[in-house]
Image: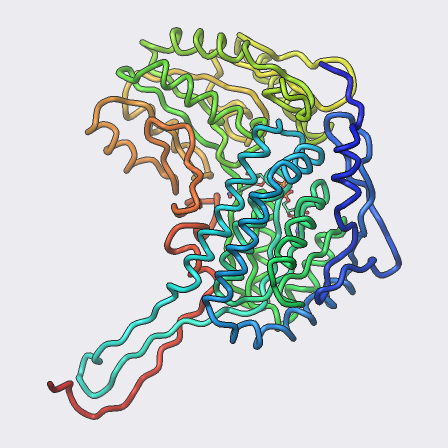
Length: 497
Ligand code: NAD
């Protein structure tokens, strides 16, 4: 691994980002002027400090969002769409700068960060196009004496809470539909990665978003801030992306005001390789599904279930591919795999690997903590992973492939579905009937069929079971930010020509 020295471009990109809170169109310091440090996971050193928002600051942000709501809802849909489209153009123009910022605070390689800028920007473009397609319906009532008019209107001020693993795409996936629907919002970014969200908010402001529509409150006091906002009747919606335990807690708190909620929670994706699969394609899919985002993705393949007849071939080829991966600081152009987010996460991953090896699994690649600064962990392949081990039950959130075998389709499906999570499943087979049968029986919101990648702004992203409630993206993503209103119109008679 190369030593990391902050280049001029790195210092510059960090210095240009706003470090305060965005409230009612103004960047300001937190009440009491508290600050917290943002760390570079490749060095373990602080990049800068940002304002540490308090519950009072969150209330000020809600005041701004509530005050702006009516005027914002009245802005023509075409104008809302144009703002999103302009923000898309600005993000693409500044892709390299945004990519560097993502890499600096989150760790992934620049190639991956550029891909995240495309992915996040595409949500803004997609929802910019959806803003002008919010429709309703009209019909004759069942008994013919009335007309049923259904319109849709914005739900109102939203709280959008995002994780650190995709600091541009996760807020964009929520801000895009909220803006398109005509909602105002407060964004609470993860404390590990507030810089990219601040830069995104600045772009949206530059693109023409009026004051108060988008407010941003970085904080280390997530629980205190959220509690205060959730008990305030002016807040109408909570959209959360993060871990299942925090999602459960927020759902119980949201019950107090019967808040509309969207929950994008944790995953534990099975990756099934059937006997007839194209093994080379499965290995390439596995590399994407496992190593994308340093393995720190809700849709990361977590458990590999490989037919016993092809397990050795698949494992050997996967090990060979993993050995080609260059680990290093994301800012180094030669790097394929950057560091994990922090030392706590690295210790968790190392602990899971050690525990699994202790239970009888074999390490076929990686598995050893590198020396030196930064939170690096090598691409790791474990075979012979015993059933029921913690690594098969919990999200690994690291570059570790845990391989088990199966012999029948029923066994593969049983093992794949044997989890409280249900976000995504990956399936490799060349048998069309088996592909459809198994896809239908996987208890997941998404299936990657002969494909290690499912993220797509035009598709409904989301999970079943304890992986969440609701969908982001696709034709229905905007529905999460709209209320239906039915107007019963008395006519007294059936429709005539
Ligand atoms: P996390 O649950 O720890 O934190 C997510 C966000 O919630 C952060 O902004 C955090 O500050 C905030 N938070 C934490 N405790 C809170 C509380 N008590 N009240 C209010 N807010 C609180 O998750 P993370 O470690 O940041 O992200 C990783 C998790 O996110 C993984 O479980 C991953 O699977 C999940 N995730 C899911 C999706 C999806 O679309 N389903 C996408 C990305 C990440």
